[in-house]
Amino acid sequence: MLLMKCIVMMLLQITGAKLHQCLLLALNDKIYVTGGLGLTDKSPNSWDIYDKATDSWFSHKNPMLTPDIVKFVALDDELVTIHKASWNRMYFAGIYDPVDQSWRGKENEIALCWSGPTVVVDGTLYMLDQSLGTKLMMWINETKEWVMVGRLSDKLTRPPCELVAIGRKIYVIGKGLSTVTIDMDMAARVDGFLVSSSTGPLMEHDFSPEKCSVITI
Image 1: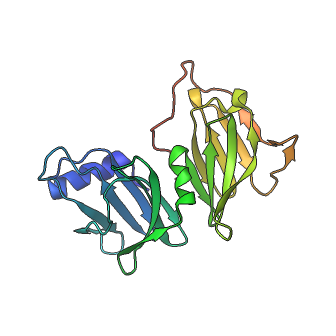
Image 2: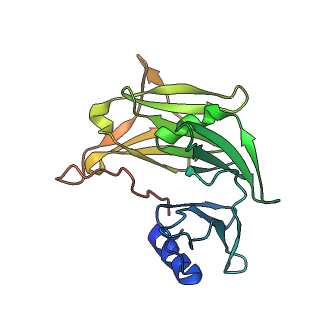
């Protein structure tokens, strides 16, 4: 997987656009870059896609009804897009189908994931809710709702946090690069708290991973 900075620099060289605050996501050997409409009116309102099979970039007009995308999630071979409406500051969701390059609306309950880091494990979307304590939430597609998997101790997670998954293990990375590991095959709750393992901070300073890119290699 390529680092975000490298991808954006490649895109700048190709398009010449002064993009900023881009969102990118990898799905089925393709990298999708959108958002970051730029600092000038000459910046393109488009999706730029890298195809590994042809080792090339191509662009097409942004298919969204609104370009205000704040989050990308790959789920069930489609891209879930989370938007922030400029007219009422509310969040809503959509689905982008890479096959026919079309966008359609989706139930807005899933848009709650805008507020926390997310990760997908075996086709299931998880979110770390950090609003009132630290809770791992799971999206139930059949009932269109978020349910709590369990709570985590703030003393261990040290929020704000980011999430990354390797196999069926979810890693919660907090300040100072402290790490809490949740094995989804062995996940259990004791008095509402998830059973997990943890390692202390790896840095002397309380470095925050918030707004950093966490990737699996």
